[in-house]
Length: 359
Image (cartoon, rainbow, N blue to C red):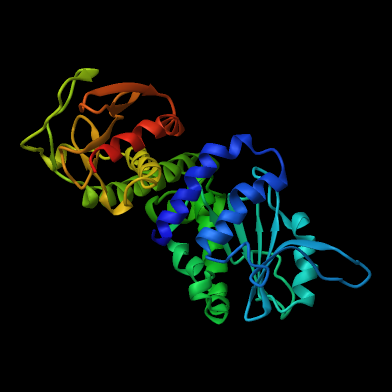
């Protein structure tokens, strides 16, 4: 299983189980330990690698514990403090990390609630943990740009110097991205004035400023949509089998693929996210590399071995009511209405069963 697949697997688990988690201890068991063990590659059952409830006396505070300390070559490298999933992560939650960071050799500390991970180091002042993280990572919104840096924290590729060297850039790029996001959604006066002064020749009165606030929001939104559409077009496939219009189709046995006009196919973000959810589910029974997708004008197909004769399911998302098309052993498709993408997980067992039938 590659690195991204491990992350997707844990992401799928969080989506399925987060609602049942009520305590910090349950969060650690269900989500944090799998992250340390499966994603980062450290043996949580080896006390020379991972020490839970790590104790280090700090000044007058005796017996204070940090949730996990990760060791490499006999020295503490990473400190981890955990909170219950769903809890906010702020500096008030990081007080023990600040104290432990100062008295250990650790250069990396992590504050997490099992879903969101905030990574800290000592860029601002040596041996003193920064107040702002240099990296943030959300398992339910995986940012592909941070994956190379996250890999550097794994046991097999641990490179603390490389991490520290890149931390400054990561920290400021992350903060700039947050500012850009804020300006795109709720632009402030200076941001609006910047664009208005370049396209409007008249005096910028309050009425003009109000007008350009809405125009700026609309322009930035359309710009982002254009960028997304361009990326989707480059990923779209124009080959697929004929559309199915009945709720149940008997004896599905496609032979020749349908050639569709690529320009008429509109792959949506929901379809791609649905594909990744199905892939995360099915990869537990078949190799993830065998799971592929093809889009048509009528539905979004998910196949095994990129083979029309091995349909896993179909996503019928090009309508107000979304459906997932599930196949039985005779390749009969039955459509089930879903109101949210998370409801795909309710069909996990049959999806895995269908994929297994082809081997």
